[in-house]
Length: 212
Image 1: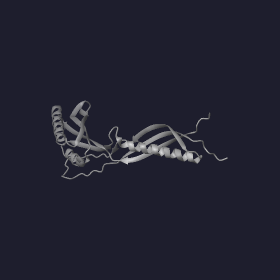
Image 2: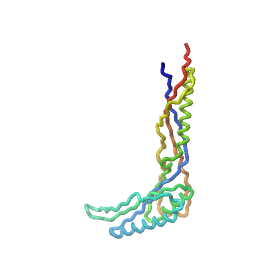
Image 3: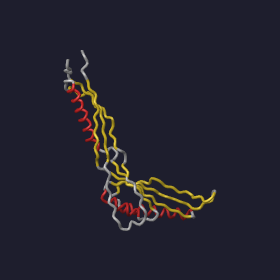
Image 4: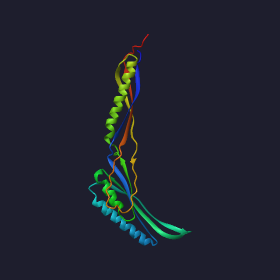
């Protein structure tokens, strides 16, 4: 018995979707010739940052200490000129309406650097579900076109192989804020996230009606 003819096709879909979360980094710094003074200032500024973030707890989804650094600055040889310290915190928000205000308030603190935001989809986001369905539809449409080209019809679905769903990675819009927000308002435009899906579909077709 002859094996039934099969078509293997690839389907793709690309869609831009709004970001679901935004992340930014805020770093407090301290510097002094005396080590204990530098450490005390660093601890105080870190505590002030935590208090400020607590005040915005209703819009902050997650916050994590991402780095602590204390190091001497050398003037000549092993002669210490000053001690420098920093504490960095990564903040995640999903409410973008208050994000600009929060960034400016953080940037208005002494010896503070703010970088970001980085727009992202959540890990395991369902934003790709519709894109995957569109990729399958695209593959089946191609299969029908190929079958029609040889005078046949798609008969049976054999396999759908997911080649993975990818985004463009976290979309960045990085900004550095200096102190003195000056009462200004900061309007942000969230960057759209590109979601891509690709599948391989195998289908059998009816006996082709090839021309003589």
